[in-house]
Length: 265
Image 1 (cartoon, rainbow, N blue to C red):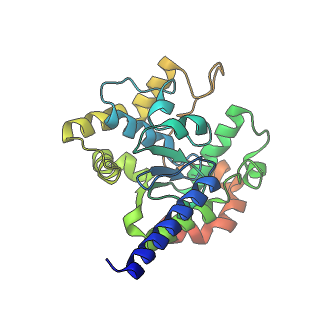
Image 2 (cartoon, helix red, strand yellow):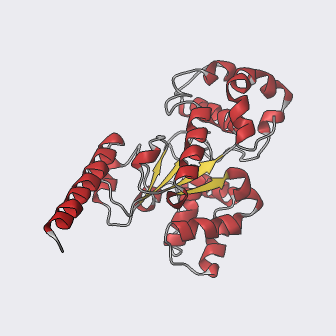
Image 3 (tube, rainbow, N blue to C red):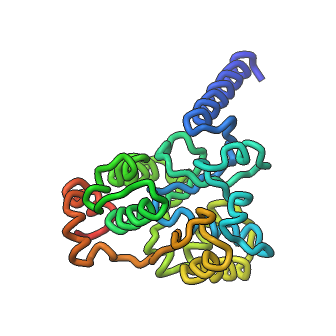
């Protein structure tokens, strides 16, 4: 190989290594690897649901619950120290819309109206917010990862430019065609599992089964009586009349994004 070509390859490698190092710092990790896969979404859009599905496919012999999920598909916002010590390849949950930082990622998309309602009830349950839904919509809690239109449209635009690095999964499709979505997720994440494993993981990750798991093993927040992570999981909650009225400010901001993303107004 000629010296000029060798030098060019070394420079390209240094540039790529530097980009990965910068990306890791951006999301708070000591190191990011090219074979990392991230599970990304706006809060309360199905990210944790997909985590449980993946963990069940990775470890079909385990009884997956909130007591051990961090060992298998950890949350970057809770377990940075653990993530830094995990063997490769890693699958990591993240809400930050740092799309260019991720080597590859599954993006879970949910109707923003339902996501905001679910996020509101979650914030009340974890006691990070007190007030009405209308007050919640513009609060620092609701926008800690940016607005829903910015988050969801950012993912869509990035996926169109980099289709090989992104798998878009709709929350509503997880309900309508769970086996098909589980197979897509397994293939994208490089999980070498047969149809039997996918079928069992899909069954174990049904919303009703996750609700039962939470009742038996406890919720995400230990010792918080009455708090439920898996609350309803039903699409179209925003259609309830009183809720729809409170969501008006959100619709004024997100109406165009909802239409672009295939959610009719």
